[in-house]
Amino acid sequence: MALSSPGADIPGPVPHPVPHPSPPPSPRTARGLLPLLLLGNTAMYALYTGVAGVLLALQIEAIDPADKVANFGLVAGVSAIFATVLNPVAGALSDRSGRRNPWILAGGLLAVPVMLLLGSVDTVLLVMIAWCLGQAVMNVYQAALTSVVPDRVPVGARGRASAAVGLGLPVGSTLGALLGAAFSDDHRTGYLVFGVLVAAAAVLFSAGAREERMPAREPLPVKAQIAAFGGALKEHDFRWAFIGRALLILGYFAVAGFQLYILKDHTALPAGLAPEEAVAVLLPVNSVAMALSTVLGGWLSDRYDRRKLFVGASAALAAAAMVIPAVSDSWTAMLAFSAVNGLGFGCYMAVDTALVTMVLPKAEDAARDMGVLNVANAGPQIIAPFVASVIVSVAGGYTTLFLVAAALSVLGALAVRPIRTVR
Figure 1 (cartoon, rainbow, N blue to C red):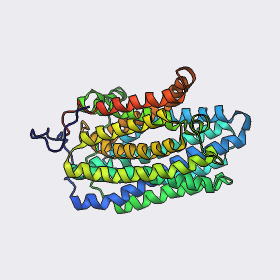
Figure 2 (spheres, rainbow, N blue to C red):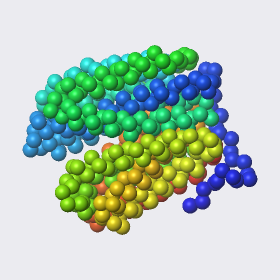
Figure 3 (tube, helix red, strand yellow):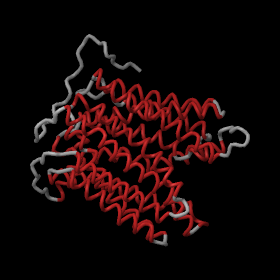
Figure 4 (tube, rainbow, N blue to C red):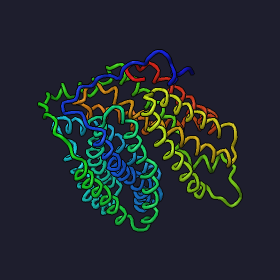
């Protein structure tokens, strides 16, 4: 795969000029945002990991142990579809108001009563309804938070800002897993802790990140609003960024969702190491690698002003990681896979987020269009378990799954090449 290099003699295309209705932010303001972006995203990912990945599963198991797998899949699937649809809607609402901080604050504060409600219900149906409400308030929070980078960060600093956003994933995921495990015997208290964590982050962000109000938008007819959600995908560069993200995420979660089964049925673990214990070993390896590449990739992409190069290279590295356990079923191969995959995925998410902010069609629709991009994040996560199960059951087991995931990552790397307005 030929990618342009920083030393090319022909100057690259100038980044797409996106008019902004408010004065451009200063680099000093952008620097002040970085710890707040890290805090806000860490709290969000901690809740998503600890609630959806630990407490929700334990609560559903306690309600109906015999059908826990089917019930959990139903709750997770319905809530994921709900979140996918709601995210761009929540983004459009914050675009219309011309403000981000009030939506971040409202979503964060509402997380507390919704988490209390989730902890108090005792049927699968009520759990599903309560978690959909949880997805609603968290998507209000997330949609406004993700639009802060294109709103307030200068183009030359977006790699570092996106790294701060991306760093929230490994830090928040680790924190969420630890808190979820700590409250595994008391999920009601655990839910409250996660709600308070997000609320505190929302208060600190809203108090510390000052914003200038953008002009409020006139409401559009319902038909025009529905058409507007797909309007961003008509833009050449945004469409290719969307396709690349969807392919990479599909490959990543097709494997990640089956990690425990891979360790049980594919990997030759050392004597005495249970699959559950192996997961606990792999998580910090992956998180440290992801955190390192997130920070380094974001900084280097700003330093050399090359987004496509780093996005393509990191997606290719993620593809290479998938090949490692395909050719070897050893525990050493899984450790290497976890580290290399963390390096590739962390850098990709940091730099690709910066790239996307540069190809948004209109700055005044930033939150809505970032919500549209979230479909490329959430949609593949919905279908990944079904795709993976078919591959494993019909097409040759986990080795084939790794190779298909590698191919999807390569296609994700190639998808950035047609983008014209970002180097």
